[in-house]
Picture 1 (cartoon, rainbow, N blue to C red):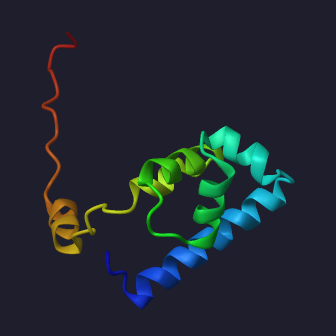
Picture 2 (spheres, one colour):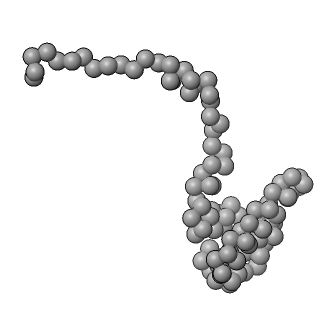
Picture 3 (cartoon, rainbow, N blue to C red):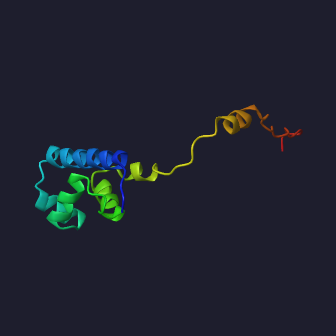
Length: 102
């Protein structure tokens, strides 16, 4: 698999942030790897930005760190400002008031 320099750089930065977060929580690689359900060498690969690590391992790591919602944003559709504007411009329907107090 050929990985572009941009992707490789992004993965290295992501791995570095994972390592920083693990260290901030004062967890060893052995403890954090067991929490994710991976081996220490796999965690090392994640922290090094290795592109061959399965996305599922990253998803579990994000969940453990309380960042699972970040994964949901990866391929989220872009906001369509024109549609949002049109939706805001539509007049809201009002309910007819009842006469007679019923």
